[in-house]
Image (tube, rainbow, N blue to C red; front, side, top):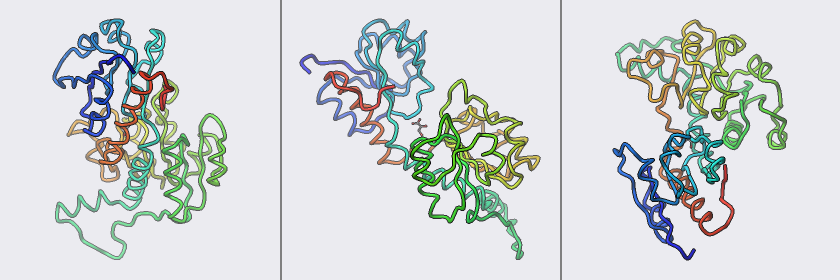
Length: 314
Ligand SMILES: O=C(O)C(=O)CO
């Protein structure tokens, strides 16, 4: 790399990533309060962060920008078509977060099945009147788990859930996968998965096809005792339909790391439901994973400047 490329960093990345970037590039950390990142990026070759990039952004970004690298697995904040149309490259940071997100999926599944949020609320209000059959939840053993979207995170979730004596794993998606066979999981239609699963774990990314795919009709197909876990994207769920399903007993409980909107307003209905465990999108929030995600994004940028393939090109 003979030239000193200029990189604008718009996320608060850990120092290990910034230091690596600085060995090869001139780095500017954007002011998080700056209203006009697009104008600022005019002077830069690379944009590194989770900034929303669409046609309007690119119009004001000008012609110097060559690569957008997001330190995230999901890239629904990037208008990939517009980025590509302008000959700009794009990279993301999948896989390195899969273990951390899978841990949260398992955690949410257990918390929702075992009514832990409800128990905690009772504890806080001094209402824990324990009887023999007090606050009974459901076991994981001998149940059927259905994974919607068996990508890397779905795969890591299945691997971890195998420790809980699950009888059957189902999955759905565009096609049957070798990893599904390796895991002993059965490829089924979404309809069959919803009808047969005791636990539905949603791992799909947000696309036109997946937007609000979990609606009234989908929840109506699920078992009354089923638990819905979402670690994919909030907008893949019709939130009002989910609230209805949880309130009416159409499904048993939900464990959500992602919601629509995000963050949820403090007075949101979902936060009032005893059978909804809700987290503020923290599936990949560990020291180790965030470092790995940031370093992956940096390596995407460095590889690009060195004329090598990106680690993960979008
Ligand atoms: O990287 C992503 O897409 C995330 O959602 C992080 O949890």
